[in-house]
Length: 261
Image (cartoon, rainbow, N blue to C red):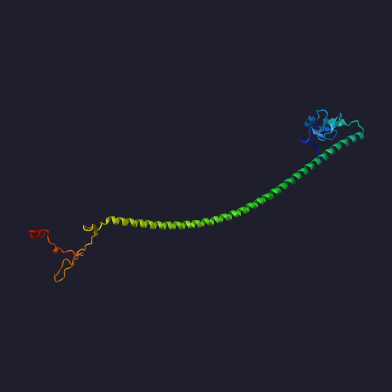
């Protein structure tokens, strides 16, 4: 507030509003709004809320109109000597100068407090930024280490994948071999069941079943140009008689009967 400002502020610590209408002026050069002045100065003894001075005099507290009428201005100093008028004017100007100085001191105090708070906040902010930088650098290092671990896991995963693919190929190969062998065994088993067993003869003297020698089929010879032909070219492989050397059972029985009698 400067000297050219025509508005005073309430000196109550928690008010600080612009004054208009009526104001309470004290002998200790303080001024209060009508609301706080009426509330504070209604008690006895009256104490200034700004400087805690006792206001026991009759004219230590005056409720004045801040915008007086023209009639009041014409009559308030009328009839007074010039020195009295000047003394009153000087006191009024001193009150105004004190209010201006007080307001400047208050603003400087508020500014100093704000600067102190700002410095404190800047200090706290600097500390927080430093801690955040440390945390950020630590997190960056952790990210780098995690990237290395991830690359190592990727490499191991690729190796394991290659091994698994190789095992799958081996398994498929073995599965194919197994399937082919199983099919072959199934075909062999079916052939063994379809093939009749080789005939044999039982030796009553020894009680052993002997494997019979396979009989060869007689070989047919082709007829030559001279007309000479043979129907059978070889005997049986085990020394058996030919068809024409076998005797009939009736003839053998008759011979045995003749010798007996």
